[in-house]
Amino acid sequence: MKTRVLFTILALLMACVCIAKRASPSDIGPLIAGDYVYTVPHWSSENGTGQNGGYIQILDAKTGVEAWGVQVYKTNYKRDLERDVQDIFITGIEINIWNTVLTVKDELGRRYEIDLKSRKVQAID
Picture 1 (cartoon, rainbow, N blue to C red):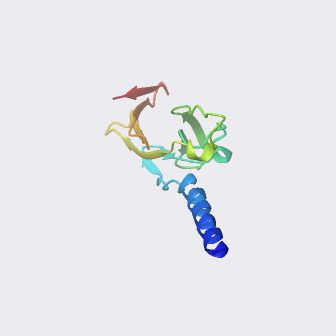
Picture 2: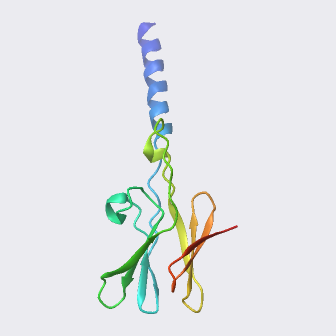
Picture 3: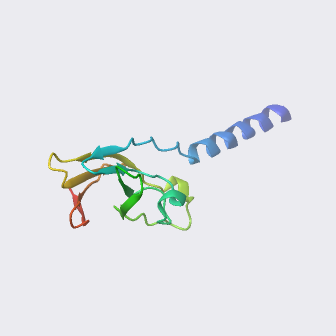
């Protein structure tokens, strides 16, 4: 009987741990338009913002060197929750036919436009 109870408790604890963690974000392939390559580095170690997600990196298409980057949105982490369950990742990017506006969509369904000339970000919707 003790073994059965212990096994049940162990199984429930393992299920709780599995639910708390989230899956890794889907990779967003690079978008090549004009003289630039638009990439979505998900991890803070790659994007230098101190948060996972929410960053677009723009590379020179000829050299592969970063031309500039932009933090699309800021994630406000709550101290009492694990950071990984609070991360919000970019799920898609599109560019208009004139290569002047990049549209970004995140996991929460929010959309943003980046004016590629002024580099200003604007929430839409």
